Image (cartoon, rainbow, N blue to C red; front, side):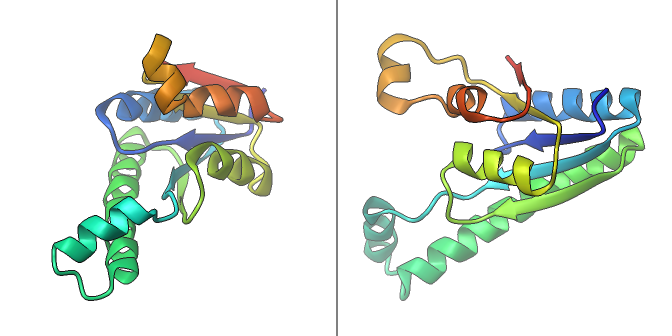
Length: 148
């Protein structure tokens, strides 16, 4: 069936549930797993907030904070994988919007399934904020398992 599962996470509580399900599925199928977290490109609002907080180099500060957050997220996934006795590589994709980073990683790593969470936004919130899960489902060349 599936031989290489990509598990996408942003470190949220909901995403952690998808991580556990993805790892359990990898174990059940004896599949390889790769966990990915995607850091969005910096934007003017983020830079203004950092500069206002007396940041010397807002871009470097932003990159350092995103790298540290990604490291914490992926370390947590690694611990969960170890507890479940599942092989799981981890990747941090930098300067991409989440959906694009997830899809590009699935292709580059030759994954045959993507597992991710959906925040389940509806109506105006979905329209204004968008749905990364919806973008991945729509654009992914491989099947996507969305956990709610």
